[in-house]
Length: 283
Image 1 (tube, rainbow, N blue to C red):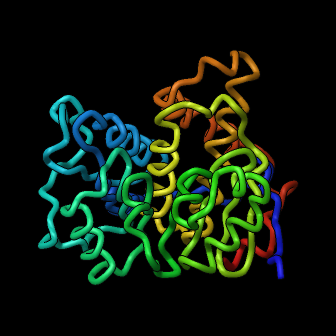
Image 2: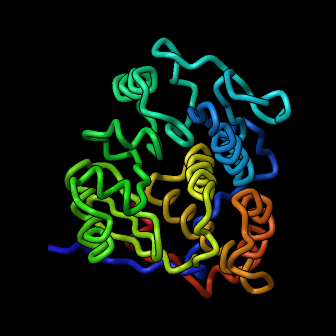
């Protein structure tokens, strides 16, 4: 039986944005850890971390081995191992720009055992997934999900709704099937994101999305809300881009640069005119 499908447009996004009081401080934004990057792919870790900061995370931590980290003074560096104390973090992302090495596997398994908060499993770390907690998130595109389900990208593409539902039942947690229209499945509903376009078909945009979701999680949004807001905002930025620019020209780093303007426009929109779906309010 197919779960309820809830369509999400830009009109639903303002009500999901984190709110801040006049007395807010950086601790309220939460600590976000990005376990990402590998030789040749360090850019993914920087894109992910920058996106987390841009959406409001209070602190963003990166592995101390990240290349050129000295050029990015906003981030905090730390050593990552199985002995790391993950408790201080509000949210963790693992996998962008990473390879599923034995070291990454050990850290992943340590998170499963020790960490009680939300984790986003992306890119290279997806290969480590067997079963995840209900508050964890996995973010495959069609080819990645096909490998996880021993299927093909063509079969996934032929029925994306069935595929994302099967993935959620198989692996648990929340499954984001990226692509046109991105689908988000939890144990109760499927959310169809109607924002976004082919301008996002570029390397690095998935790393940005991962960071955006991590940043929203670190501020206390529920996993489902963080996923819906992150994916919806990510797509909205691309929709705004093509109003003045060609599809071919959007870069992942520019998605990050456009986050402040996009949030500003959404924040200023009329919230009462576009109420949030009741099915999402309590997720």
